[in-house]
Length: 191
Image: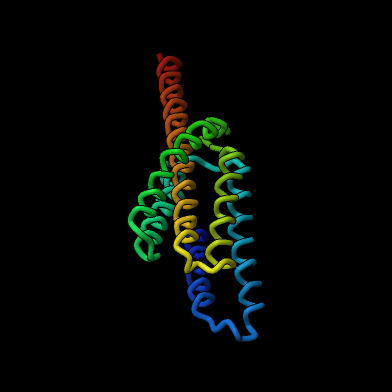
């Protein structure tokens, strides 16, 4: 968990350094390489954690939707946009939730010994990483002074948030059912 905070802190430090840098300086290549390395690390960790099973905890499955919602609030507050475009971006949470709920059912919660584990849906992982990549390209490669590109950045973040919320709710209900089944089975075995 601490590594995730370190990676996101590095992300914001280098993003702010990259965006305030003079475009005529010779260190632009190094900035791009550094950003690619940071994004590669983030993507690698997300894929590794998503495909391999992880011990289940409520805090662990709610952290990513909370981070995405805070990022969305931050970008809606900081990026200059018209209120109607922000509203459109927020509306995209609903279709994202529907998609996340549908393909979030591919996520699994299971017992490994006496430890409750979960695996994320590869489709949810793929969609959120694709939207993450699109957002990064729009933020750093394309000029983000265009109001429509700023709206696209917010929209991709809102869509990702909806997908993650849908998967989160599926994981939470699946884990609750497994825990209830285990406690009822233990009650039967003890009787």
